[in-house]
Image (cartoon, rainbow, N blue to C red; front, side, top):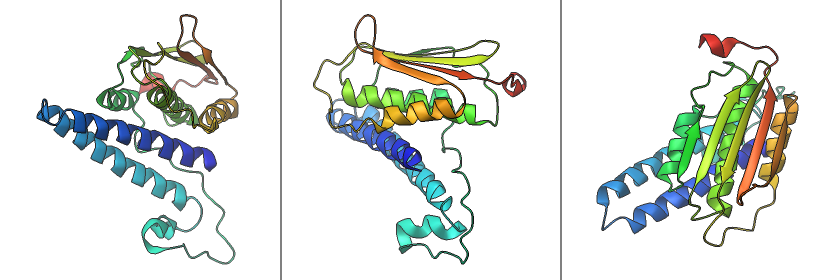
Length: 221
């Protein structure tokens, strides 16, 4: 649960701050760009609220999500066994990347058209890990001249690499490393692993390897 809440809040708030800053700086010289940033800001906030309601709903009865607006939920007796959190509102990698571009991150991609196993935890893990890695670039490497996301699939694995060129301004050093822990936990649950550390040419590199378990649903998607 802590992993889900962290991913929703850390990503959404970081992107919303970047979008609002960008809209404010471009308001006079590029009003159309400001309007697009504000529209994306609203969309990000609404999706984050929906994701949070889904997570809270997994704690108890259907109306648990109303805790955000109507106080603490009423628990049944005995409690209903908690259901697993649902998928995030956004599960398309292209859309995720576009959101970071709108927030000012110069992201290039390769392999995002690669079919993934459909309807599995692997798809969710890929989306969450890429989102977390790009959020970290946004927070810890502001002003980076480049960031790249590369995805490939072998016969037995899905591999993702997120690499940035390093920031040109001071970043946010107030992190708790919860995001990195969460990425590794997500990968481990699927029998995979995450490597994170300095890139060969500077910046930061995250490499994820997830076994597909022979799943071929994505090939028919």
